[in-house]
Amino acid sequence: MEIKKFGWAFTVCAAIATGSIMTACSSDNNGDNGGTTITDPVVTYNGTTAISSGILFNNGTEIGNGSQEFEFTGDVTLSQGTYLLKGWVYVANGAKLRIPAGTIIKGDKQTKAALIVEPGGYVEMKGTKNAPIVMTSEEAAGHRQPGDWGGLIICGKAPNNYGTLNQQIEGGPRTKHGGTVANDNSGIYQYVRVEFAGYPFSPNKEINGITFGSVGSGTTVDHLQVSYSSDDSFEWFGGTVNCTNLVAYKGWDDEFDTDNGFSGNVEYCLSIRDPKIADISKSNGFESDNNAAGDATATPLTTATFKHVTFIGPGAAKNNFDYTANNTTDYIDANHLNGNGASLGLFQSAMQIRRSSKLNVENTLAVGYPIGIIIDGALGSTPAFAKAGEFTLKNIIFAGMGVVGSDGNNIYLDQYSADGMNITDATKVSFSHEFFLNEASTFTTSINNKVMEETALGLTDPASTGQNYCPANLISDGNNGYVGAFRDASDNWLEGWTNFDPQNTVY
Image (cartoon, rainbow, N blue to C red; front, side, top):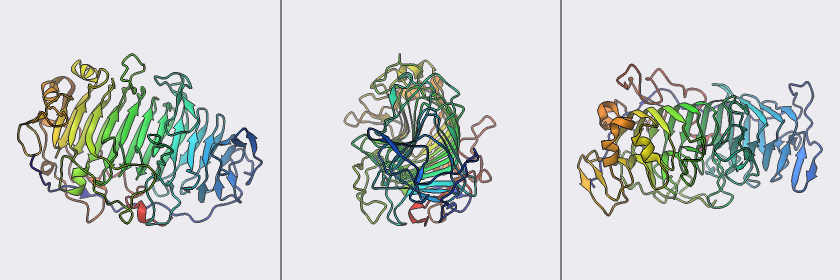
């Protein structure tokens, strides 16, 4: 099909935020219990697991002792400062860790560092708009890459469809999660950035930027940014946690991945893709499963609701959209790939809902993907659920898509393709618009039931002036509401705490 070039439309609402940069840390840290945190504490071993009620080592500069299994059992409040996270640090059941605003935590590359909150563990990461908490690569500015360290994993005791403490978290850690406590509380996570995470410990076992495993609704989650993750930016396995104000920036695989009965509400999200970075498994904005087998009898079903999301896809980012979206061989660091096992691949869709998921999406804007939405019936009952109106997709604008919708039939048929033609081609990878169009009244509506061209959105290219994306004017949903992550240029919830150039930030 003819390649369509786009004239872009984003108005910059604010300057790029870089966050606070701390350069020192204290060796004595007063906890909320009135005690003094001991640095280089006593460590005992249970097999290969290192266990300690203290968490700071090397005169208070390092979190964890570098062990692959370091189990923290105490109650510690850190001082604001800069720390090196070493090894896999488990915040165990009953343990509490508080990390203050402005703190910088660098992940140790050699030990594949990760911070893992286990069910019953509690972590407070209370950054602020002007002093976010930053978890980033230990590498120097200009030399950072996706997968430099592990990532942030939060686990709890809320329901999933694997059962109580029966599902092992993705990526290799020992932790099993899940239970019956819908309002379980794993802590507070506010104004936090996670950068260059996602170390792949073996094929298909990468840690995501931020992973939620059966996290309960008693947990506070807002204003989180994941940048350059080597796997998904955010992924939820079961749980009921509610999240707001999330930013997924130039991740490798999917932006917002939901599985295993996740039922929380997520609002106000921004996703920005790099056209050079996609996964061999084919990258999406949303990827949603009930479980890997597509089993509709595995309950609770995945029924999460996302509202007010803006997806800036690879076609939008490079301003010259090729619906095949092949990656080039260059990359973000002097044209070198990170030799960590991740593989370049293809982009697929803004939204792939499959395997008996009932993902709900409302008031969302998606621009510049090969496909707008895939209602995937390869495994499970998602198309049947959609036809029966058992989940909601409404007030969605797709702009600049190669193909608007797909049901996985063996033809490619789309009168709303990027060049405006109705094309049938049985040799292509099965992207049919027919099901999407015929069933639109029962499970999805766009504004006026039509695809909008990106030029109709009233936006301009931000590339030369910054990358905080707010429309100049409200994009109405036709019912006194708005579509996308931002109401208008005055609604810039990115200001102050985000960073869209973490590669060159000196920490």
